[in-house]
Image 1 (cartoon, helix red, strand yellow):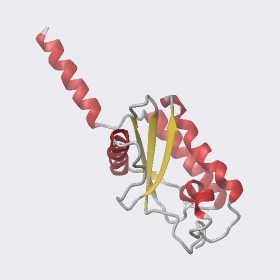
Image 2: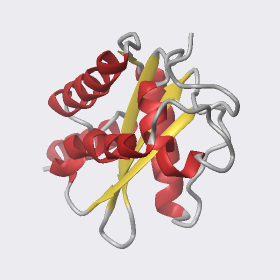
Image 3: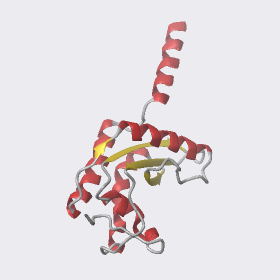
Image 4: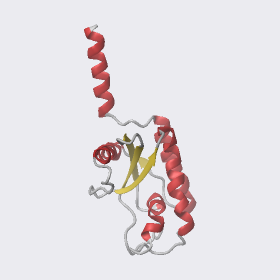
Length: 161
């Protein structure tokens, strides 16, 4: 009985130290990012396990302090809240809906709130994405995606190169 209990504790600790997204979820999130990027001519993103770990840390921080949402790590960021982890594959499409507000203009402090999730997805110079999630005290989940280098630079266009 003691061995079984020890094994349970070991598995629990291992689960807490690694990302929680399944390979299928990661693949879907990355594929959808790259779908929207190819439409505008931005190069494909690669998945970053380093950003995934940072995203997990930030998701856990949001779970502890739900009013905190923006990171100070220097990465681009998108957040998605849902009641079901199976809905994480909808996150990128949800963010991309903002494309209806973006018409090729330069990013300004005044217009950024209209399309910042979409423009981070398509930002030409961004090369890596990593995402993970945590469960909030309310029972909801927060998905955090970090991007490197970050996008949404004031005075620039996301695809201007």
